[in-house]
Image 1 (spheres, helix red, strand yellow):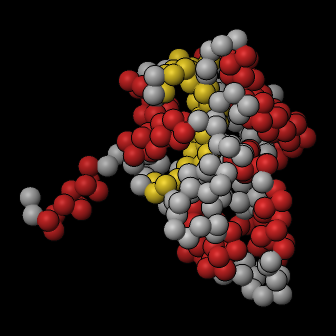
Image 2 (tube, helix red, strand yellow):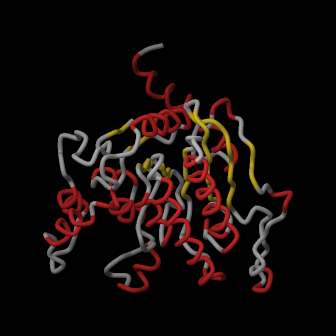
Length: 301
């Protein structure tokens, strides 16, 4: 094959992670593609609140909890279905994630080194279950912080839904984050910002503009994501395994609040931000070397 055909052939050989069904994504990440699902759809643990508001519930409430092996170690994968209610989290789905994280921490305290991998595809709290959903997300935050005292917690953002709202805080609490070009990460979603700031300030329909600020590559270049990978299931699995192999970072990202506050203090809100100014604001080492916290800055694939 000629050199000119090499790149297209490699592209065609890829297996898109974003295009896989949720359980296929889990299988692509775990050893041998094998896992055991906890609280599977046949148990029909559905939200009791959606039907009252005319919304058809889903038998797994949009969350899959799977146990298997990842790089030879016990692992639990917590995956959110972005196609159900925008990946929003309510009482049941949030409790499934928080409970699984708590069980993983208990395993570690008993000597079983269970690691956790979160697949984020979520707009945040489910508005139909606002208070209960927010309480569940707070429990997820606490469970991540507890588990990462024993094992690194890795998060993946790979789909176009992205990761927003309270679950973006959960992503920030992870020891390491992996993102693809298709991913987005932010506290408020584009539509929320547009509604508050107005269309002239923030046009949520302008996809290049949105991704230039909150897309996976921008978040990686700003140091808020640890690894930026192609939308390729094999590459993503390898990167996740490599991050787990690093062990716990010397300083968790969420413990570096003074550092981020100092960076934000440099920003002049009277001047319109650009993607370039945001990158410069957050960049710690333009060479891409690992920073002092032990985070794997610059780990592109």
